[in-house]
Image 1 (cartoon, rainbow, N blue to C red):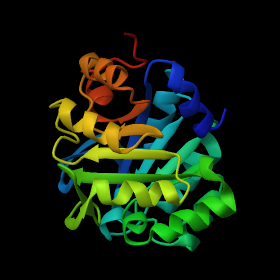
Image 2 (image 1 turned 90 degrees about the horizontal axis):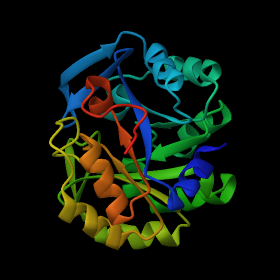
Image 3 (image 1 turned 180 degrees about the vertical axis):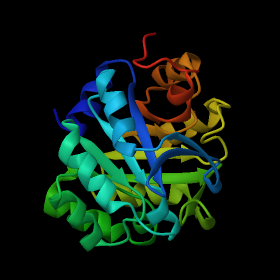
Length: 247
């Protein structure tokens, strides 16, 4: 089953919880509020982290190259090994700045690419990639403080509101949007229901929460608000949310 099929199936099912493996300096980590200097290392090997979640039943793994996102380097060789050896679909985000970078990942076997800053700066890139590879292989991640979109590894405010970008992305043919509340990512503070509800109103296609989920109450909130799934890191690594999730 492809990643897009997994999310499509979740329209009539409980929210899909996708394990996240954030990679920094070659290790599987989690950042507090996206700060690269406030990391917790969970596995020395990102491949071991990904295999761990697959062994528990994950059918899709979300990888983020934090070094590429922040301009501190890259972990493409690590990602290539995970893609080659994992045996389930993998989606990758972090530092994908242009069409060449996106297509290099897609050709390497990545199931779909996740565009962040590049999509904010160049919505036409989203349309080009969707036209060339199909909407099932292209995802956009809008990372925000409140409803202002942050870019460059969450380090900068864009001055743009989520409400300004969602119509452009829909026009580009985007089907799946990941939304992350940067102020809660990696904090185990849980989701902001009012914010989730507003983003759900602004994006009527497949919506995935990228971080902020702390426990089963948050998973129930997703279901109540009609949000199809979540990318989850710290909560499943530290056990505040048991994986696989059973409500």
